Length: 315
Image 1: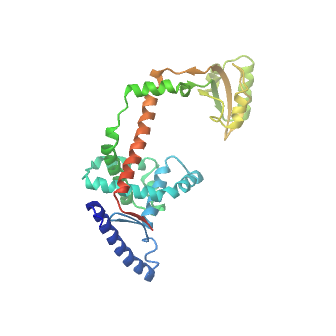
Image 2: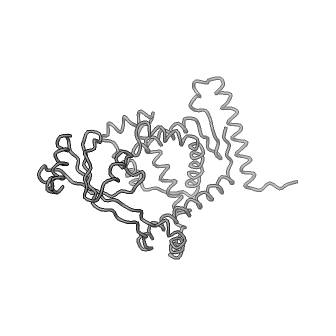
Image 3: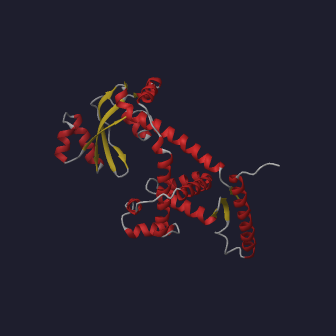
């Protein structure tokens, strides 16, 4: 006869209790389908259940957070691309929160408020913020609860993983020496640009420059700001603009280009040849790269351990 370990017995008890609860819940759901539509259980994680509403709220909160970076169709496409992984992410979050509870992690209330204020600051007013979260079927208390959970997860991950990661100087040097090609700055083209509000003025500025006046003199005459920027070939600029700019010769100006409601004139200042960056220039970047790699590996290993020790069932 095989001996059942304490941990194994604990998992069996949790599974039995979860099955009993699920059976009762299913009978109720069959009798009252409309009442239980959003409360349908979709996963069990140890003694916690995850309902369809939990997943819907998780998607909605993710949409609110991503709205600082994405808008409209781009935002919805991003959410859609993440949906397949969101249940797995929600399960992992529950495991991390259970670990935070087990370790009795305490939070600073001021930190929660700061994070909520960060989200509010993405909106022009408190009314707009309230309207945005209401559109997702949430209230401010829901946002606070999600932020509290995120902060708890960050704290326990910081304790269990981040605080234990060390990057030695020799690792940075070794990585640089083995990957010098990664740290070659490509050829860069430096441009000046002027934005004008009418095509006639843009044509006049172009004519005056070709007649020998400098962009600085023209800018002072018409109170036009001159911007300087650098770019490389291939993808940084809109394709039609890139085709014009990278045909310019040094000191040559482009014909006016309409971009949205303004007309732009570009001048090529110089072409900066490719250059190998030295170790001192890139050591911080390498350290961040190595740290993130170790962090991801350690987090995956830790989560796999938590999963192996837990009862998880996706329904």
